[in-house]
Amino acid sequence: MKLDFILKSLFILIITAGKSFAQQQPPITKDKFHWGRTGNENSGYVQAVKTGNVLYISGTVAHCDSTMDVQVKGVYERIEATLKNYGLNFQHVVKENLFTTDMEGMIKHNEIRKQFYKKDWPAATWLEIKRLYLPTCKLEVEVIAHFPN
Amino acid sequence: MKLDFILKSLFILIITAGKSFAQQQPPITKDKFHWGRTGNENSGYVQAVKTGNVLYISGTVAHCDSTMDVQVKGVYERIEATLKNYGLNFQHVVKENLFTTDMEGMIKHNEIRKQFYKKDWPAATWLEIKRLYLPTCKLEVEVIAHFPN
Amino acid sequence: MKLDFILKSLFILIITAGKSFAQQQPPITKDKFHWGRTGNENSGYVQAVKTGNVLYISGTVAHCDSTMDVQVKGVYERIEATLKNYGLNFQHVVKENLFTTDMEGMIKHNEIRKQFYKKDWPAATWLEIKRLYLPTCKLEVEVIAHFPN
Image 1 (cartoon, rainbow over the protein chains, first blue to last red):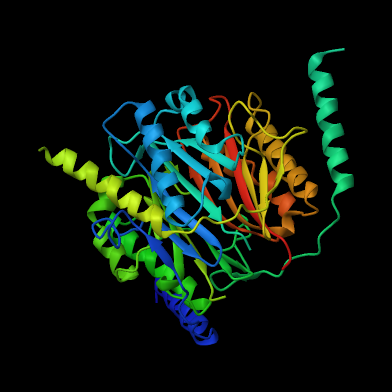
Image 2 (cartoon, rainbow over the protein chains, first blue to last red):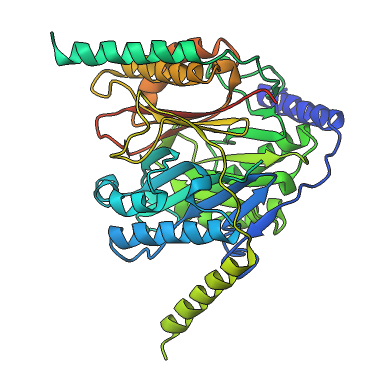
């Protein structure tokens, strides 16, 4: 008997055992938002999901064939529109993750982004990565926002 | 006295001052899951941590030496197994972060992923990055799931 | 009339419609932390934001011109200092996201990181990416920590 087979069997056994211990939880309530429809059925995602008092906004892109300044403005306008759909604004944003294929370009146009936050800064992480979902996009931003308790 | 020294001293002073202001919080309750053991002691992580009504699932990889379709199926099966351990399923997933070294390959095999969600899409961010923990892995997916309140 | 114009008008209409449905939420309470000041006004972020019982710590860098071992130690010391400011420690960390431009170097010096967690591992995702905010930085780590309920 090969070691590989033993390991695989053991893995299945562990998973099966795990299954039997946990009681099935009832579904959660989710308040989803997408751009005028129930979701992007092609890619398989929605623009935002609210559950409890947390709002998760998807990585947002805009005007991917344009220059960086246009993309920055477009991305934050779309995040603002998403927040507004839930009665929120940038004051409710606690975490921002920014992904770009051109960090220098993003830093150069940061003033456009900063106007949306009005000096009420979130915790943030910025990364330069190889490419986004669409090869022409230079910027994708996701945020987590919270509702009042 | 060098400016560098002044800045370092100031930094230490600030940190020290910070320490004295905050009252030590008691530990939190965490319900961890790993594959048949308490964690990956070599890398220093666990597959999932539940605290309160939130479940954080680690970046999950599978069958790293195989083709992309096999990796996609394997990754989502492992996420499904992790969710099941807590009595959850993909309905409870609110956010997905997908990291791949081959975005075109992932988009090509997205139908495999979409079957797990059954048209109940999460908020999502997809990025093409340089490499994952293991150089052979092409796909790593992490999700946040919530329990009913 | 161009299709592009119709699509744009439709988009504006949807956004406008969305606005009228959601009631404006009151602001949330945020407890921010930065290094001896209210935030980094140049980049537009703060080191950490607490809301409810969740603490979001920004992607943290340290000693960017030094070797990897020095950066690893520095990054986790700064995260520790941030946690301490809120009366927390690494026991309260539930999720870690680690971004590096040198995965092999990070893996090599993982023992330095592991000492901070004291075998109480978080859920984690590690990625090798093209570059960080500053081109000399090799490592950036963000964590989510929870307060007791």
